Amino acid sequence: MPGAPDVLGRVRDRGLRVAFITNNAARAPEEVAARLSRLGVEAAPTEVVTSSMAAADVLAAALPPGAEVLVIGGPGLWAAIAGVGLQPVRSAESRPPAVAQGWGPDVAWRDLAEGAVALRAGARWVVTNRDATLPSPRGPLPGSGSLVAALVTATGLEPADVVGKPGPSLFEAARRRTGAERPLVVGDRLDTDIAGAVNAGMPSLVVLTGVSRPLDLLSAEPPARPSYLGRDIAALEIPHPPVVVEGERVSCGQVTVTSDGIVQRSSASASSGDGLDGLRAACVLAWRGVLDPDRFDGVLRDLDLA
Image 1 (cartoon, rainbow, N blue to C red):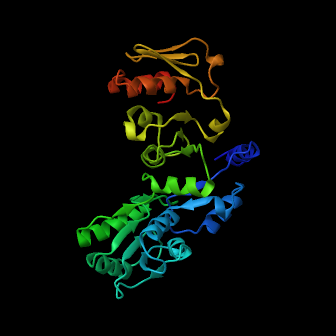
Image 2: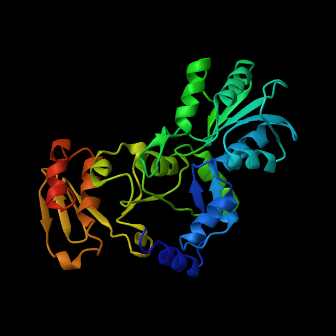
Image 3: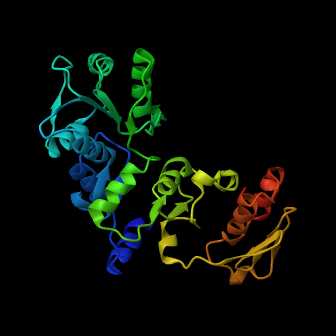
């Protein structure tokens, strides 16, 4: 995203710590950090927290040191399991007490077959995430959730733990590893990033440079509602304007939205600067249940956010 490296650099200069949290279970932290660095984003492997690492933490707490874990996934998951003192294996022959599953480009039928055998024998099933697809230049491709669905179909079982977003485990792992006392989760997906923050009891900032759009925000249910709203990651440096509720009118900055969907601007030049004050006000109205969903599209058109 344009400006992201500079913004994160200034955030660091102000003394704040940064962690990069990803559901991607295939890559090791070193690879993720290297990719970010190539994009101009300063990142160290110790600042990367993957769903593989969270899965390994869960299993390390549940199993004795050296216990075998049947791994279905990429190199990142294998390295994470070994990194906590457990023994990753490929076969169910030794009746491993746990199965760790995540996405990997080389996961094959044989891997799923071994997983089915282990799960039917009673192994604990820990999954990195259930994202059905992953993005690619050719469009969405099968993700970890699609591979998990194959084993659900084959065994009739469900995972004991899903550690990736929107579950809380990944965020809690990031908090432990960074020592954060007042963390802020920043993301572009309400159903994973923001829902995960809510599940972990952490405040969140949603940005509009990715999946979730203004209409999604107005329609969001309580488990996926962010604490803060920004146009992009530069929102980290912009004071969040207060919202004032007056009955069925909500004001933010110099924009007021009423329960009947009327948008009133007193001075566009005096707004917060990112053009989202009206959306902030509309979200409060919608989430209080006093803005009819049939009026969402009209409000967004009047805010130039349709």
